[in-house]
Image (tube, rainbow, N blue to C red; front, side, top):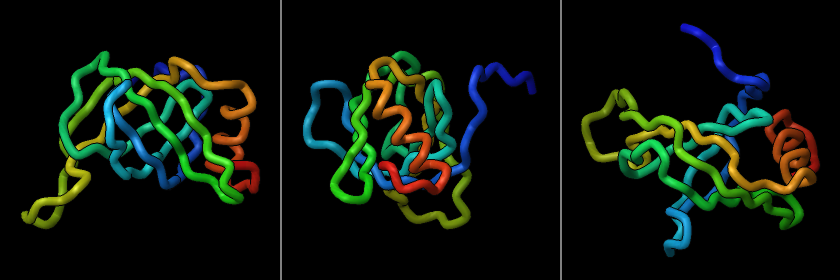
Length: 116
């Protein structure tokens, strides 16, 4: 598969919340594979490419990282159990709006650092 990322991914599992831009209430999720350009996150439903999300990643010391992202792809997870799962889908998102300091803290948290 052709790799089109400009920044390397950092394997990670970070607690977060997401909502369709301007929608409430946010839903709990996990963010993974953070890079300088975006990340992946688990969702309750299939999201259309182009959907805009507001995401807040929870960090230690109550220093959350908030960003706006656009869905680039979304797909169903291959789950081993047949019962319903709150995160049956995954989406890859590209950062649309994130402060440089927040991006640095997010990347540091993803790599196991203390900055988030």
